[in-house]
Length: 196
Image (cartoon, rainbow, N blue to C red; front, top):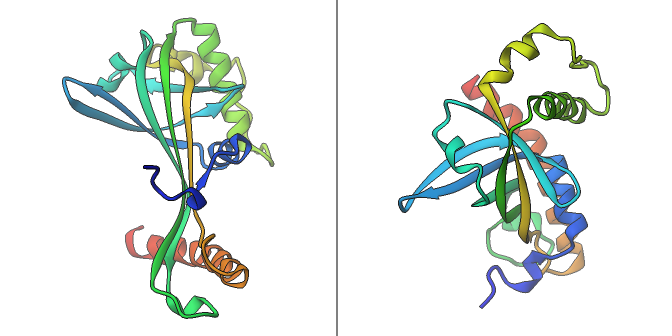
């Protein structure tokens, strides 16, 4: 049995890639001795592979090599949908976009590849304004290369979970979409005002 139901799954790889590119911070899950190790890392998509970097003191580093299995979760927008949002009678629900991936990971040993990858990742994350450019001759970059390891994940399984009120009438689906936009813009400020 597939879960969530088919109408809440999105197998369009282009939609999944768009989530990865728009929300690149992944939850990276490895398992050692039946215990999960979990780290949150930005990963950059490149031709059915994901490129990332990890601090050498992170214990999960040892599992991000040797064709080990890894599970990844990327999270898109999400929010509570009150029945008051809909034009018809409904129950409360939660709408969200999540991507689950599985893959095989290998370490990339080259310091030159690591350096270029950090520059490329910074360029991607600075888009579209590119206010900051990480230059190859930056002395801080060279100093930190010995404390970072690069890895590459070959994606083996793709799963998009797009629960966006698709099972409702078209008007209610549109209203739920508008609520997702509104709630995400409003809730980030309210949250940050409380904790930061």
